[in-house]
Length: 107
Image (cartoon, one colour):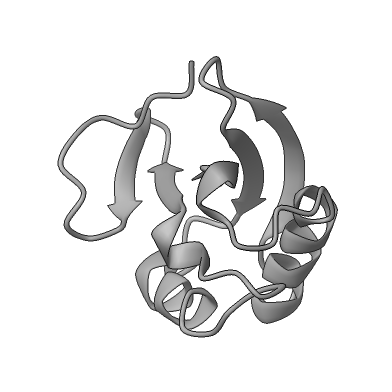
């Protein structure tokens, strides 16, 4: 099982609507043709939104993220506000943005 965590800095969004919490997981599920499914949400201690998605181990994460962040979502450039971690059973490691240098911290 593949687990993805999207850590979103809400202060970097042009449109800070609370709908992002609900609409983004639906959008991700739609763009992945249902291969990714919502697995809950939380807020990190720093106030950033954490969205969790799950899918099969065979899902091609990096090409999907390139496609996901290629266009604005709800008038937001999500690529500027989002760090994505993937857990394939050995803890989360950052896969987006590619140049990210650090650990994926959820607390």
